[in-house]
Image: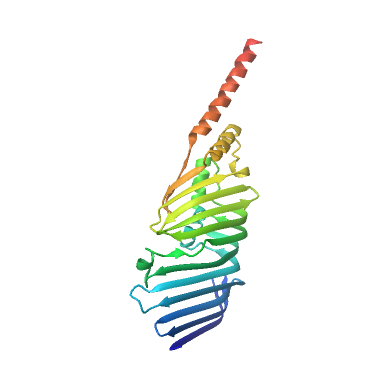
Length: 266
């Protein structure tokens, strides 16, 4: 190698999160730059490798990332909202994170250049187990539409997300499982932060205490769920009310008929 820089750190603790056994090695061979970084973050191994060919005007770049059983007890970084938009804007998340080996390619030495062509080589797969999300505005707004206050704070058993980056956007398919029920969320988030997501919920997550309303919600979920547009910072969920109104009207009519029949036979 023409140049090699090695940086090692035994331990660093910041806001309750621990980085340990950091080993960072950057080498320059001719015009080829390679940076390989290994560490444990909150007791889970993390590896990040970046390769850059600086001999070209728009240098090809390859990045590989993987993590296993990283304990989360953090405020969600803004970038996480692209991968898990259903948790967008959350104040914090706990659990254990595993990111299967992910490879990303693009051309350019800056984000302005990379954003036009960066893409995943294969689908990314992210898993979080046994945790809780706090203060997630996306979920809270869904709760307002469903008449389910407090949905922004949610305990879960698992979160599984499959995602891909292409054409200046990140596409996602996310499943959240917990004792209260199931959340299925899929769609896309553009690099300009606009989004379109479709969400369905089941189980106790649809129980509001109003039997008629709950029946209507179940029908609405069967017929497509909740469509959300807007931006990451300001999502706008829309619920197809036709199924709900139809169910409410049907039940009201049945009750009216029953009451009239009772009156007739008094």
